[in-house]
Length: 246
Image: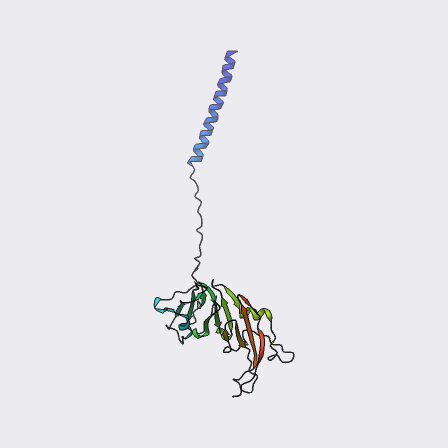
């Protein structure tokens, strides 16, 4: 009886030993196989240029005040970019950073910048941007690309008025330029580029069309925009602009 029990124990021991040997053999086989390296394809990371300004040499970057910029007749540099930093724009005791970048080679990164944010992308001539401060607001007259617009910015450099956007929304019919069924609405392209006047609380402009006998004379309508604080009215008709005899 005892011998049979001893044999049974021996069998169990042998089974355990066998299992251990098999386990060790499997471990050795797995360990001896070389690990496959996972090769990751490197990702191409595109560099994003967050600088809104083009590279302008220090020799072609000028510090100027508001009135000095408005008197400019030509750019300070030829053959590339010229940048003007207008350094005395103060609204409600806060300085607003204003820069104009121009290129006489039609380079792409020109424009008007307010507090390092690009506002416009075209500057045909330095003379086509004019600035004025009224009621602690910066008014910008932009007559580039053969169209006229007026922007207004507050002391935080935020745009609070855009004449082109206002005209697009209001769709004002110009009764002088409209002929019969041909309805003409006031837009940035039929404004007389030389007709703007700015005063405290209002500005005015005129539409234009070569309807007169003289090719250079024009007729249209005079409009006025008034404002109080940050609230601007829609353009209001004032009078007809008659042809000028030449």
